[in-house]
Length: 165
Image (tube, rainbow, N blue to C red; front, side, top):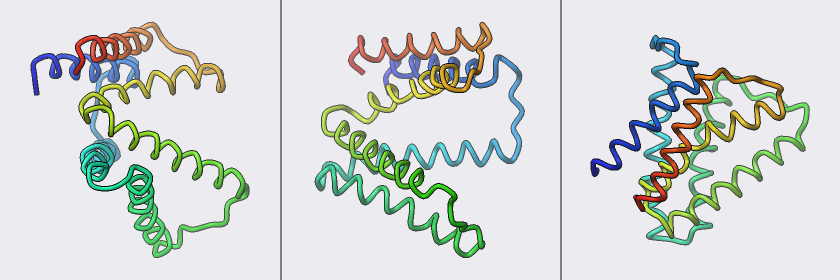
């Protein structure tokens, strides 16, 4: 970790905090702790292990394995908890699964050309894209503090690119 990476990661985290919480105080609940644990495991699985897999096998095979490694345990947990129900719109499930597989393949292809640190910082733009889509598709609104948070995330993303991190 270099000082540049630490500063940009801090700006991204602060921007995400403003965007998500509207600048309100954080209070950790049990759900927050599970969410942070999930984020850490996703970072390990998708980024670190994904980058390692791409070095050892093809990107398509790596992406397929990543999907299966996630869906099989989840399906088993749901099955044993009697939480599997037939969806009302099977075509939507197929569309979402196909989209997820395609995006995983794109992400794993990106691992061939960029560092895991660079990709992770660029993926931090996700909350900004989600916010833009929520405004356009769900008629949600943003407060000025959320706009500042989104701006900080975008600014840090530009910094990542310009500094070649």
